Length: 202
Image (cartoon, rainbow, N blue to C red; front, side, top):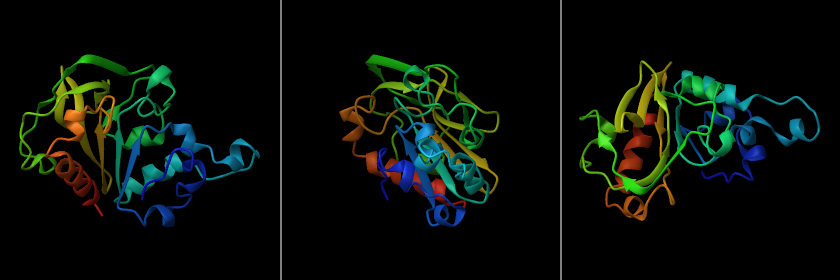
């Protein structure tokens, strides 16, 4: 199920029963306030559920959650993502900067494998395609960093309560996610195995 950013303030699940119909939630290029502030709260000053806390509870009870990098995830451009110091950050395998965390790499770079043998990377070669940027993150003490770039976590995962979380520091699409990555023969396999691992806590 794909929910666009402009639909998310209303369409993103409001209750645990709604959220539990999904095995995994992926957040990509969407700011925290888009989900936190339902129009009933933002425009009408009414009380509504805190959906960031709801996601944390969802993971603790066995759900899967991952954040994918970009200009509005993690902290993003001009720190407008606003995911730092939220309940979602508490569940993720990384700590998020309080400032703009974008690392633009116009010359391109290839992430390197830090931890071999993880199910997410099974059958995927160690030589990855190049990327053009990422969000600079810091792994938590109990995180497993599978891919890195110059010491920064590029793909990190973690068990949180009964569930699992992940952080992919670059984008799944251009511009950071290069055409070399998007058209990579292992692109679908990687995302399938990532989602499958995240959802196996259920």
